[in-house]
Length: 115
Image (tube, rainbow, N blue to C red; front, side, top):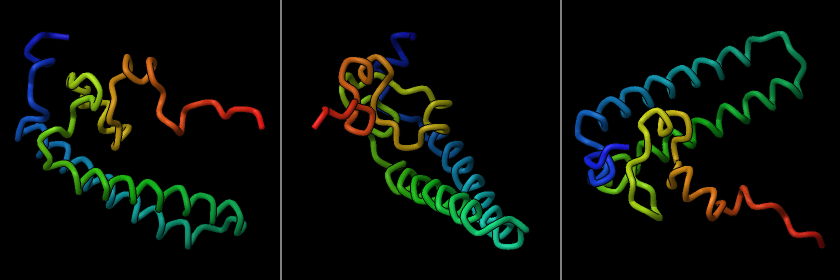
């Protein structure tokens, strides 16, 4: 990673705009998919599962759009290195780089202790 990338204060205005457009387009696609699930000739349980995952993805997109304007969006919360834009498009609410994630996994990724 180049030094200039490591030191940047989050996303540039152009990167923010591009990400906002991508997220908005994806949100529209997911809403269209929800409509298709209603029309699809599949049993109720798989349709409900698809709809639930799609709604969860829409919630993640809405959350990312809500915090996209913040200065630190796009920086690792631990080491402050720039996160790859491609990664932000895939993992919208990603807040740590891979190196920091390996050092200290998030709660959702930590193995459960035996009871």
